[in-house]
Length: 137
Image (cartoon, rainbow, N blue to C red; front, side):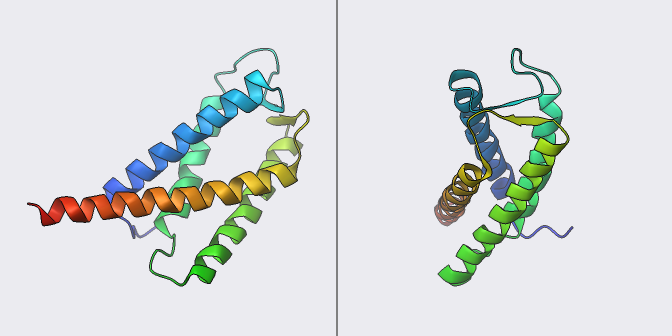
């Protein structure tokens, strides 16, 4: 897969997205019991495999994000990926990796869409700060 973003942009964006995801999972799983991975009563090391899968998906999302496109294209990109992510989530529910408590896929769709918009702003910030840094050299 051809890399369209710099290593710095990919690494920083994906790291931020993973951190945001871990914090979200921590609160929604452990504190509020809305959903959980594997076993409800304990933290399972198999979750690390879930996180590794997230890295691959995030790489594709960030790498192909249409930064210089019109706003409508960015929104369509986010909506398409929201649909893909919800389908992936439903698959993890079907194979019993993810379990819903009081959670449902509509909540996920809203969270994914907002998260993708937030991730775009993080990516834009990283790109802008890198440009400023390069200009001051």
